[in-house]
Image (cartoon, rainbow, N blue to C red; front, top):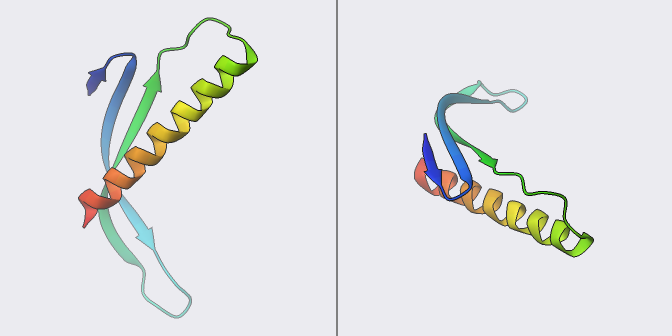
Length: 71
């Protein structure tokens, strides 16, 4: 578990199962990173959108990093 400012991250190892019609199921070890963000008090509409955009950006960054690490 890692704390980065107001974001708490937990990394979990798991197995990804993928299959296509007519093919065998493929298994691959993966790491999933859960991020818990410290909640701020109620904000204005613009602040809510800014926080949502930051959360999406952070999620995409984590997904890209996870895919790069899996290679």
